[in-house]
Every structure is written in C-alpha cells, then in structure tokens.
Length: 219
Image (cartoon, rainbow, N blue to C red; front, top):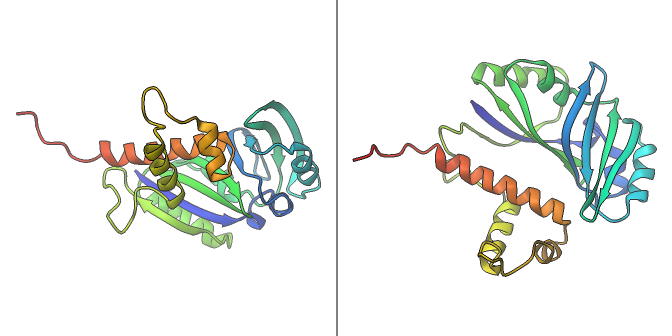
C-alpha cells in the first residue's frame, strides 16, 4: 500500500473561480455519493460565516452545475453539488481498482488530495493517467505506511505540526482541557471545523507512522 499526497491547481479541478473570488474559503469534501464520466456529486463542508458570498461565487462558477445547502452549523455549512469540469483525478480514484481517495481539500486556489494505491503498479497507472491528461499535479509526499517517512520526509505537514505544538503548549490535550477548540481556531484564524480536520489528519499521520514500526517480540 502506498500513500500519495499531491496538490493540483483549482483551474484543473473544480471551484477555481469560487476559491479565487472567496480566497478565505476552505472546502473539505465529505463524501461522493455519485459519479459519471463527466462529473461527480460530492457533499462538502465550507468554513466561514459568509455563506451567501460563497454560494453566489459557486453558482456563477462554470465547474458547478448544481449547488444545495444541506445544513448549517456554527463551524460551517454542508453542501451537495454537481461538478461538471476537470474532475479527472477524483473520477479516476472512484472508477479504477487499486486507487482510493482518502481526503480532498480546496483552499488558496488549489486542491490537496490524499490517495491510497494498492501497489507500485497502481501508482504507475495513475501517474500515466495524470501525464496523458496533462494534469499539473505536484506530489508533496509519497510513502508506504509499512515504511514510515524518513527524517527527510516529515510525518506532519508544517500546518499540522503548528497545531499539535500549540495544542501541547496550551493544554488542549490535558484532561480536562485547559483551552477550548474555539480559542485555538481563533489563534490560527481558521474555523473550528478546519482546526478539527487539521488535528485529525495530524493524529492519523502520527498513528500511521507509529503503529507500522516493527515492534520487538514479547519476551
């Protein structure tokens, strides 16, 4: 099994004009409920209080055919949409065996994807697919869970490391907690939902790195 983390420009994926018009928006894909060869229908979260501005931008975005607000919470809003352009990477991982999409996040006019492949052959097929479709994908990290990243490949991204360190210093991990999630979110100028997802990703990366280390036999 191989984990690949990569980024692609929004103009080669979806919501390019939306992320450009509302640069503070963070879009986290929750799940995909349907897909075709020309589009996908995801549920996704977006953080920020000005949902009307996000919705106006999204409804004028040529990559969006439909947009429906499903629910709204203090930390974000849940939408269902139909994306109809430039979704090759996501469609591939839902139609090809050996490829699984783990995470999709849009921010700052680009998308961050986290993919899992069963083996090297599946990864090579995906690379060929990216090349044939002329996608500008930049690999940020590539590793096997059974072989944790080396010192030259940090387990955590810079943003993940920042929140974990802040959590340790502020007493976030203490029982009971000495600081609230809202306080940490305010410190990093992000929503609680975005903070929570950053923590989850950091914890999962640390867990994957830790539990795949070969342990000594019981004495």
